[in-house]
Image (cartoon, rainbow, N blue to C red):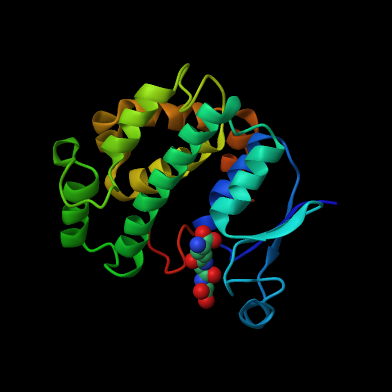
Length: 220
Ligand SMILES: N[C@@H](CCC(=O)N[C@@H](CS)C(=O)NCC(=O)O)C(=O)O
């Protein structure tokens, strides 16, 4: 069966799932979510939220669970338990930043003042150890320097950690500027470039199939 992604017509939390699939050359279908069904059919949407992913192995909710499933199935989960744990650390670290980012988009509406505070708390290399709740690009950069090789985040091969880093770097480059990002965290910018150059990803990024809208409220 053709794997199917159920989501809204935005990048949002489905984008890393789509990126992992195209990176591996896996064809998939995109289906719009029926909002009423999502809110009432718990056997399909156990958290009354999307994204949801269906393939021959299951019917899965929770974006990071879906990505981990694709990672295990298609060899994007490193070699051995040590690398798998490093990938998980990065994935959870990205999730901590993603929650702050979503708050900047949906609660703070990307206001300039909020952006400046966000930069200080989660971005500025000088502010690790501050009140950032573990959500800081310097932490991700340090882990990639420690665990990665050959420009990949963990070990010497593409993993779901690279995919998640690509997505989180992508949305922050959009919000704060590509040059600013690359100057602060060149090793994360290098992971971004390496994922961007994967043939399936490159084709997807240039295709009309990539959603134009990043977040549900049109910001970002
Ligand atoms: N932890 C969940 C969060 C999912 C989530 O927040 N989904 C949003 C869209 S990104 C949603 O379904 N919003 C509609 C609603 O809750 O009614 C995941 O990672 O999949």
